[in-house]
Image (tube, rainbow, N blue to C red; front, side):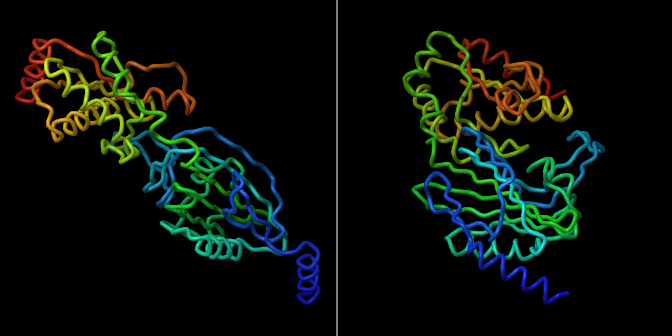
Length: 331
């Protein structure tokens, strides 16, 4: 029986040939596993994407900081165009061999593997289904995940999230490719001249191009452009004071989001102070999820609602806000 199965597998390999090149945007990026059949493919425009880099766990709301549900232990934020592909394999393939093949292929093409897991170390399959694709299925023992980045391919950073598992004895693999070379961040950050005009007119401005690490007040490295523009405007207009206002989406508890929005506003303030802006010119407020920019619970709406806004205020108003903050702290 084993001999006949082996002969059949060799016959398929001879007839179909070796790996096909996975040509993404016309670039020889990686090669797929032999005989892999494309099941689904989706393309998304420029967006923020969380690369999973930790065990998938089910989090309860005991701490009050998270809503109950699945979340990775760690994740990394990257921005770019996203392509998601799902491949079905043959009954002669195994998830472990497909994962080993992908690992070798990534290293061969110059990718650096930043995280990988196998079996129970990857966590709950239901969590991967939520984060990667509703078509992810199987048992925890047979799952494998690899996250890798290529820092210089085609002039920018590429990232790949690869997951494979078996259900009903047949492997299915999921590949997410993020291409940050498609759209440069500078095209999405606020121009210094425009920012100056809007603030002079008394407008409230959302700092497009300002990003934070997932569930954190730590500013991402790719936010420097918009903050540099804000610093330049404040330096050119030394009499202008501003209010920095943090907002979140509606994921998580209201109390936690309120705290997170204030912490993010504080992070922006501290960044400006570290770059030489007088602290007395800056006030901060956090509104959590109470002032959404748009209505909706889909990912695009949530992304728009997660923001930091700045607006000019009078010197007296800045002093009042800072005094009120000191009183609350003393209480």
